[in-house]
Length: 188
Image (spheres, rainbow, N blue to C red):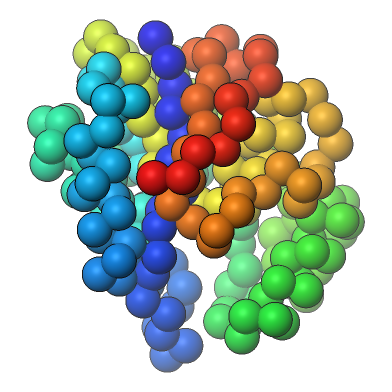
């Protein structure tokens, strides 16, 4: 069995909506629909996803092809950034840099990276312990927590150097025992 962790692709950025309510945009939807037919997902029997709209959209598009109903798990959500809400691109990137560089501190009221890492690892571990059909497992979630999970799986300190490229719609795989380093990022 293989575990695949997929980050949502491009979203509709709407400063008037809470970030967890942002859906995938047309390009993001198209990328997820195309990836749902990728041979890497052929063995997937179970899909878990974040409760955030963009991750649910990606999971639903994949589920339509694979015939597996997504299981929503709150613990798979992105790091809590509700203290700032929407931030314009450069300001968001600078804040994210500080988030990863100072994992034991709350940056601008955001959830601490160390806490988000503990949460995402526990959510994945607990989901993998649930009864499920045979086959590979797919998680559809977010880039920030994916980076934190990658760092934990690789046994390294939290660093943004493990972040995905291209802003979303990437995946990596790892063993279900969660004791070996993940594969490199791959774009969908």
